[in-house]
Length: 223
Image (cartoon, rainbow, N blue to C red; front, side):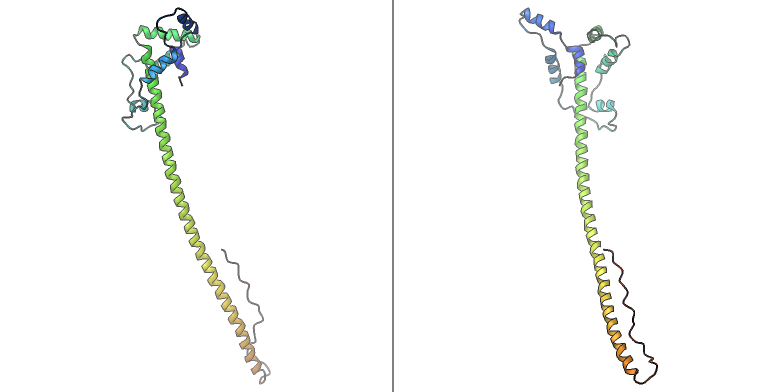
């Protein structure tokens, strides 16, 4: 898709196009779209970055890494953008602003195609670096998601192991309580037998009888 600011420079009035067709010229004039397409086709689709970009927020560093340099005459697309925002022509109609810039370029001996090519080159460099960053982000997300899955699996394994240990402890306590309360019941029976036998010979039985206290209620174990 052509950038809107291309229209400042390469648009052709419809009336002029119709006039050219009416004159039946041997070769039809190129349209603005054709001009932009030809310029864009001459720019590498995937700019090569010769150096790493250490500061992605610096567009100048991105351009430098993509080996984009300003022409000796200094008329980059940014220079033209500054001209369009000049206080002298900023408030003028689009056609007047375009013509004013074209006159300035002509006076400086700068071809419009050079400016458009500079714009397309920078735009493609930004698009390429965007894809580079997006790919890096996707790779990072994939790695971290895999790492998170491994961490979660380790947490689940450890949780299962600890839960098994807790359950084993609870089972040991329950088993020991069952053994103890069973022993206590037999103890009470034994004490009763002893007490009954002694009671025949003494007025006051020195043997303690079975404990009347009920076994303590076990505290609930955390699972």
